[in-house]
Length: 167
Image 1 (spheres, helix red, strand yellow):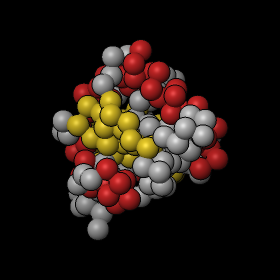
Image 2 (cartoon, helix red, strand yellow):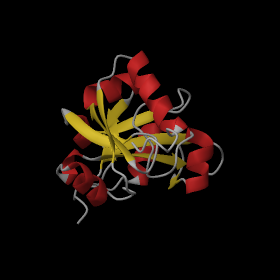
Image 3 (cartoon, helix red, strand yellow):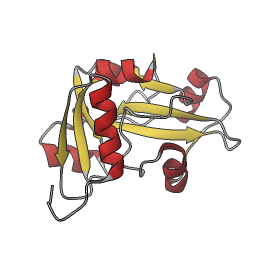
């Protein structure tokens, strides 16, 4: 990190949560925006299959659910709604993500999430031993154990992505 720039409070919150919960992580300040899976994979030198995304969906009436999925696969809102027991869901707009989660869209970490929101991890992502995900800002990424992510969120594991990878 640049010594002249104050640490990002959201990244500090992520780090404090990880330490307090015994979660090992490797933090990377990429120095650039990593808003896409390919940008994130390139920034840390991993395959796109190792990158996960943490997405907020809502039903338009106040109910929200967090989906964690392999970055190479698209979350199927209908499958997610079925697993969450909600009506139709849509991806939350960036301002809603900040309001509900306290992180910018594109920088939401897979841990340190509001405990009142259900978290569903896709079955494909759940098979990863480790992964790279957001760490609180759009320039920070963290390598984490998927087992720690599932445990920290008391997450449900379910098939919530389509059958074909994005390409």
